[in-house]
Amino acid sequence: MNHLRFQGQVVVVKPLRYSPAGIAVCEVILQHESTVEQATVPRQLSFEIDAVAMGDTAVLLSSVTVGQFLNIQGFIAPLRKSSARLVLHIQSFQNQNALPKVLV
Image 1 (cartoon, rainbow, N blue to C red):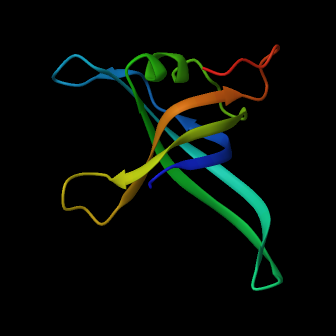
Image 2: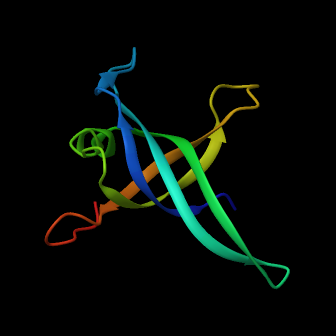
């Protein structure tokens, strides 16, 4: 199963665009920092990941701003067919900065 829950801070929000088929697309770059335990040893993580949302989720994602923290649910897939580069595909997200917190 390819399902990912992820928390990250928005560092880039690209302008909303539309695919040739007319589907809304929003791309963001997220920064993640955490500590996880691996083989009983704490491991510090700090990395950026490219993410994309499509359709209604893309329209909502396009309104987030740099610095906001998001809880994301989605999956990992290649950027393009036969590409080795992976991208996080956002299926839903929760903006931690929004009041009240509403799952999109």
